[in-house]
Length: 254
Ligand SMILES: [Zn+2]
Image (cartoon, helix red, strand yellow):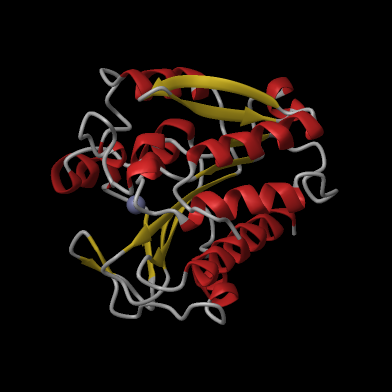
C-alpha cells in the first residue's frame, strides 16, 4: 500500500495530485514542524455550509492506518456519483509531526484529541475558524488503539443508532473488540453510543475535548470515532478503515 507508512511528504504529494485532478480546494491550516496541515474541500463544501461529510485522520501520529485508508478512499471514490454534489471536507492528517515520528502527541507534546476546545492552540484556533458556521450530516474520526484486540466504535448521534450495523460491515475484516472500554466506560459489543452528559465527560473525565465531541456539540453533527487495533497487520487495518468509510457514507446516502 505504501513504502513507508510514516512518510508525510508522500502523503502530501498524493493529496495535492488528487486535489488538482478533482478540482478540490486545498488550504494550509497551519504549519507544524515545517509540514503543512492540510484541509481539503470540494466545490459543494465551498458553496454550502450545511450537509455532507467531514472526514479526518492522523490526529494521533502513531495511528497510521487511517491516514492511508482515507487517502486511498478519496483516490478511489472521490469522483463517485454517490458523493454527487454533497459537501466534502477532509482533514488528511492533523498531526504531521506525530505521523513522521510515530508519536501520539504533536510537536508541543500536546494530545490534540483532548484539546479541540482549546483556541489557545494555534492549529485548533485555525481549525475552529475554518469550521465555524458549518454543519455536516456525518463526521468520521479515524483512530487506532494499541491496547485493543479488535475494532470498536464511539457514536455521538441524535439519530437512530447506526453503530452496530457499521461494525457488522467491518468485522469480517477485523473482529470486534467485545471487551473494549473507552476511558473506563464499558462498550456493548464494541459500541458506545453517548447522547447525554457529553460536555461534562469531556471536561471532567477526559480532561479536554476530542475532535468528535466538538463536532457533535458545536456543529450539531453526528460523529463516529472508529478504532482499529494498531498491533495488527497494516493492510488489514487499512482495509477495515476503508470499509468503515464506504459503509458510513453509503448509509447516509440510503
Ligand atoms: Zn487516536
